[in-house]
Amino acid sequence: MKKIVSMLLLLVMLLSVCSFATAEAAPAYDGSDVTITFYHTMGANLTTVLDAYIEEFNKLYPNIHVQYTAVGSYDDVRDQVSTEITVGTQPNIAYCYPDHVALYNLAKAVQTLDKYIDSDAEITRADGTTEILGLTAEQKADFIEGYYNEGMEYGDGKMYTMPLSKSTEVLYYNKTFFDANGIAVPTTWDELEQVCAKIVEIDPMSIPLGYDSEGNWFITMTEQLNTPYTSATEPHFLFNTPENREFVKQFREWYQEGYLTTQKLYGAYTSGLFTSTSEIRSYMSIGSSAGATYQRPAKGDDGNYPFEVGIATIPQANPDNRKVISQGPSLVIFKKANEQEVIASWLFVKFLTTNVDFQAEFSMASGYVPVIKSVTDNEVYADFLAKADGGDFVSALSAKVCLEQQDAYYTSPAFNGSSTARDEVAALLPACLTIPDGSDVDAEIEKVFQNAIDKCNYSL
Image 1 (spheres, helix red, strand yellow):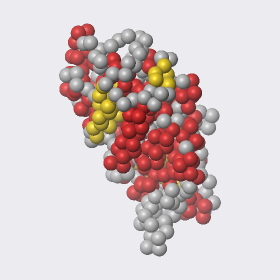
Image 2 (image 1 turned 135 degrees about the horizontal axis):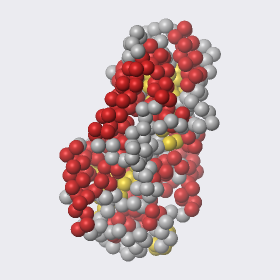
Image 3 (image 1 turned 180 degrees about the vertical axis):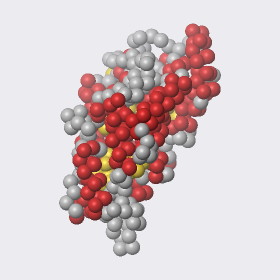
Image 4 (image 1 turned 30 degrees about the horizontal axis):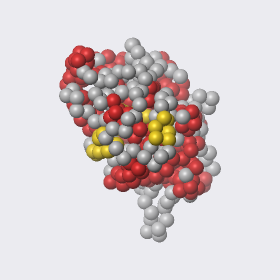
C-alpha cells in the first residue's frame, strides 16, 4: 500500500505534462462512438441486473459502449486502480469508498463532477427524447441527502463521487424474547444499558449485545456526541479527547459487566451469537443493514424460525442529534484525455443513480438500499416493502428501517490517512474494553488513545 502511495505522489509531479481536461464548463456531448470501462465487485446476481440496464442505456445512447470487470473486493478495486493510475490506464468508472478516492486524488486523477451536475446543455437521445446533461432540481432533491453529500467530504466543497447503493447499521433484536419479557426496544445508550442489565437477570448465560464493527461504533459515537474525530484539513487526527475517552470508559464498564462483545473480541461476526440456539447467545446485534439475512436464525425442523427478528435504528446519545453511519459503494469517474469518454461516463453514472427502476431492482437483489427517495414509487419495490417482516422478508424490514431514518445519515471526512484513522479507532476500542480491573483505567485508556494518534501520524 505504501508503495502505491509513493508511486501516486511521484505521479503528481508529472501531471503538468498530462493531457487531462481541466475546463470548468462541461463541453457538449457530441455523440462520439466511445467505450467506457467500469470496475466493480458485483456477483452474478447483480451483473444480471446491470446487464439489463446497460441494454436500456444503450437504447438511449447506442454509441456509448460499457465494458465492466468484477475486480474481487473493494480493496482489490482500490489497489488495481491505484496501480493503473501510475501508468494512465485506469478505468473510466469504479466502485469506491471515500478513502479510496482520497488516495486516487493524490495523483489528481479523479474527475470532479460539479460542471456535469450543473450543466444545462440539452442532449437529444436516440429515441428522440431529450434531457439535460446535468441533474435537474428535482433529481438533486430526490437523492437521500446524507448519501449524496458523501461526494463532498474531501475538504474543498467539490463533488467527487455519486452514490450507487448504500447500507448502514441497524439494531437487530430478538422480538420474540423482548415481547415475552415486556422489554422495550432501547432508543438511547442509557436505555440500552438498562436493557442489558435486565437481559442478564433473565438469562445469566447470555451476552446481551454483539456489535460487529468497532470502528463504526467509535466514529458514530463522536458524531452523536458532536466530539472530534478527524478533519479533512490538518491537523487530521483529533479523536484523543476527554469526551471520547469517557464514552470508551463507559463501554469498558459494560464489557466488564458482561453486557456486550464485539467482532474482534468474539472472534467472528456477532450475528453468529445472535442467531445461536445454544446456551450462550445474544438478544441484540448491531450490524450492517445489508446483512439482514445473516441475522435471521435458520428454520427449525418444524419449518418455523426459532424467533422473530425485530429491526430498529441504533441507540442514540442525543435524540435531538440522531446520527447513523452511511456505508456502501459510490461511483467515481476518472479523468481522461478524451473528454467525450468522461461525458459518456457521467451519463452512465447519472442513469444508474437516478433511474428509479434500476435502483429498485438493484436494491432488492443486493440487500443494499436505494439512494433516491422516489424508489418507493416503483410498484415492485413498494410491494417488497409492504411484505416486510422478521422472517422470510427480513431484508425488506431492514430496508424499510433504513429509508425511515434517512435524515440521520452521516459520513466522515475523506483524506489520505482517513482509512488509517478508522483502523486505529477500531483497534483502540477492544484494547480499552479489555483493560483489567485493578489498573489505572484512565491512564491506560489515555495511553491507548495516544498510541493510536501516533500511529495515524506516522502513517503520513
